[in-house]
View 1: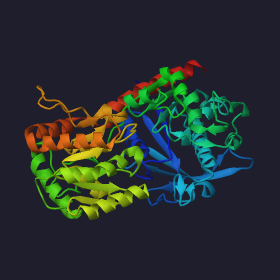
View 2: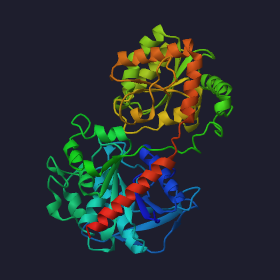
View 3: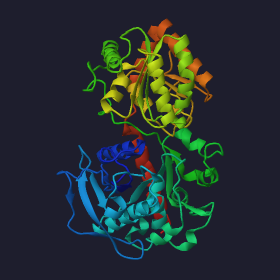
View 4: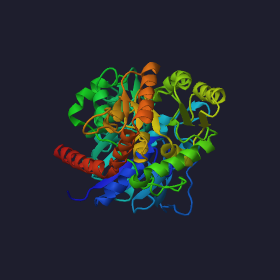
Amino acid sequence: MPPLKILFVSPEVEPFVKVGGLADMVGSLPKALAALGHDVRIILPAYGSLRLDSHWHARPDPLGVDVGTSAHWARTWETVLPGTKVPVYALEHEGLFGRPEVYAGPWGNHPDNDLRFAFLCRGALNLCLQIDWIPDVVHAHDWTTGLLPLLLNTTLRHTPLGRTASVFTIHNLEHQGYCDRRVLDFAHIPPGEFRPDSTESGGAVNMLKAGLYHATKLTTVSPTYAEEIKTPAGGWGLDSVLRFRAADLIGILNGIDPAAWNPAMDKNLPRPYDQRSVTPGKAAAKLSLQRRLGLDEDAHIALFGIVSRFASQKGLDLVAEAMPHILDRMHVQFALLGAGDPGLEQTFRWAAEAFPGRVGVHVGYDNSLSHLIQAGSDFFLMPSRAEPCGLTQMYAMRYGTPPLVRSTGGLIDTVDQYVEGATPAVGTGFRFQDATAPALYNTVGWACATYYDRPAELHAMRLRGMDRDFSWNLSAKRYEELYGWAVAARRSQT
């Protein structure tokens, strides 16, 4: 394939701004695409929390953005994605992006999020025109950039961007960007687009729906999630739209950064390890983890790790319900890292007090501790009710820690079910179907039985997980192919 010009527009980019897995994808996939020879660039907002250090420089020309009823101007900051030559542009607008938060402040979602992210969409496209760099394809992400494909199809159709294709990725269909129709006027989108087969939903503008209807091609972050969202149970009210666009929708599994998550090179571990040294390496990490979280120093107890947002979507309420019964009846420890629902935070703090030495909790986020939990745990617990892709289960397998997951979304696509005593041996983890505390309890019991009664099979499971390739290499080639389809489809329309 000839080299393509590919623009990523996103509200989050690792390592600059991160709220969730979206940032990881946009910080990693462009690296893999650039390695394939493509001209890739990224645009994000310059939030007040973005550290504009000496690696950034301001472009001399102000950027005029065609929104609202009067002139809006932005300053454009430029750097490169660390370790690459991929240009990154940050749009600075004090009134819209000067606050430090991405989506929400202390009192909830910012009430002008519709205008903020409409500005991002239009500003990103205006920047392309200003620097005379016309992308072959724009890759937009989630509701915050849902207006971008619509702008290409309407307001900017007769500009040099009129032949630019769009790919729109759904990271989490639950968040759709409902807002007042004022955003259409603000972005100079024709008022006729306020209709059910474009932007309208329940009398409001649905920014995600706009992207679903108007993008040239659609993707989501795992093959199973691509099927789930076409059903009433998983479609969050948009399943009919996704069935309508089914021919243009493909699920491509997210990858991970193998350099950032490599137990053989990880400075957060007391003893880095690979497949040949996994047993002593994990034993050292387990002891270090037990000491750090105040757990009993016991090399032989089954330790279950959790690194997660504390939320019912992540199944952490199931953990809270099942944990006392598990601790009463099984010889286990838990190491938890995360934050979120205040009730769950309090429940896990109570568990640490009620079961001293067997439950360790750190409320908040700590990157070095997250690596240590992945390495030092015997099993990684991820009982999500919904999981479009998930990354932490991939990190766990890379660190030789079999995941215990619910069968949903990307967890199905990444974790192969262990079959006890199978010949040949199969499986990289444990899956269960029902989102209930008893189902979780029984699967933890199964993992414990494997740990205590079948250590050789557990060791082989660890090695199979470590052998899986979750890098972006394969997924980047699938995106490369999809971009080619999108460009061909777009140009056949013009």
